[in-house]
Length: 116
Image (cartoon, rainbow, N blue to C red; front, top):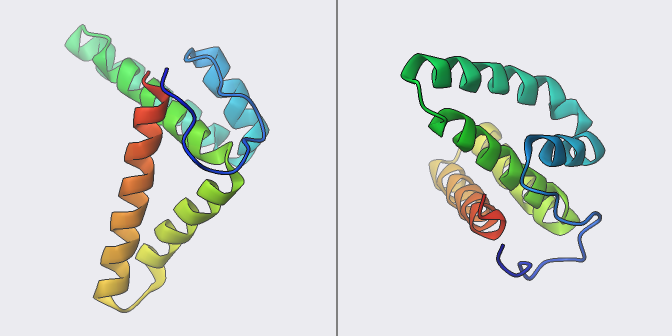
């Protein structure tokens, strides 16, 4: 694991990088995402069986660990969700591009922080 990013004090500790740990964090931080988490886990499992490799499940876990990392820092979560919303609601292509860039940067930083 890498050091904590320089954001506000997290509202919970970084979860263990397991399915159970990440799921518990999402349940606390963003319970409205549990149906999407479950749906995407079923897809990753099916893909893993199809290709006879664990890579799809590893990618799924890494994605949700990064989402939990973002959500456990309120200021980071606010910036991330604002950037995502700007991308979908603005008529200005420059604003949409900035939203995509900011959301991508924040998500990449979260991936690096969790190192799952």
